[in-house]
Length: 341
Image (cartoon, rainbow, N blue to C red; front, side, top):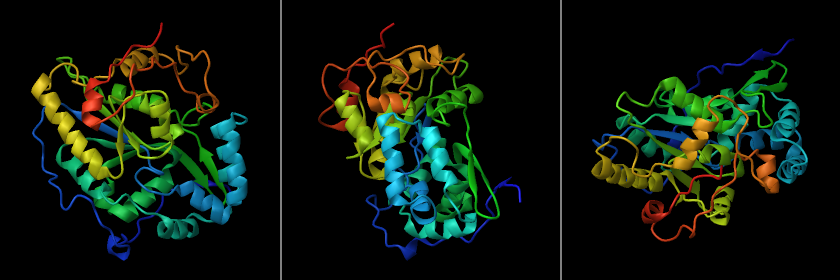
């Protein structure tokens, strides 16, 4: 039987009470901040909103297995094979119908304990929250519907690859972009900006927030005015190594607190007009440079293995000092240099 695109059917929402949760924000105030600047959030999914990787759960249980997956991961990190090429093999190794795979996935996943509160905060403050992922959209949508409920999940846009999944359990990704990554997250953010025409008539520019955890988030992280990196994981390590401004987080409670602080400081300094107080000129130079072509105009002279593997779009201009101290203070004080011409 020929494979067809899968749109997962509705299911009964799982009560989060089945897994004890201890949110760090005890019913935090999610009311409207009444600040003027538009804020837009983009977030990775696997390892960021959820602690585990949806694909890894499936591959380990129904596909190539954990040992082969580790070999394939190493091939990506070494630059031997592209992310898209390896992912084709991983997804192609699956032999499980969607429903059976999801039953295992839902029991293995843990959502960030404060994500639901943060999402409520975004909805109440008219902050668009967009999942931007290298995973498969049918999987991500079903997981969000299950853990959040469909009413809450519908407020989250998902930008990810599609999939053809046969009734017999064969999986084939349908890539969003014809690139080595399959999904160019940086391009997706720029397409979102262009499509939504977020720059107002008076020239006011929205504040772009990106939340991630891994090396595959680097191109999208480069587009942000404010970058949140999950503490102790590869994205934070990369930011430290390259002296890139970021804010570490343990749960989405940390993100909510910092977004409130940053929004209020911006309101005091700019009254919501013109550029954000923490505007990232490097990201916006890249947006302008890449607006007419997907091929980056800036090239790193000596890219690392990881940068080659994930097509890091341009060379950094390193900051003079590492980011230290209070996250918000560090973010405000860190100089941001434009990339070399």
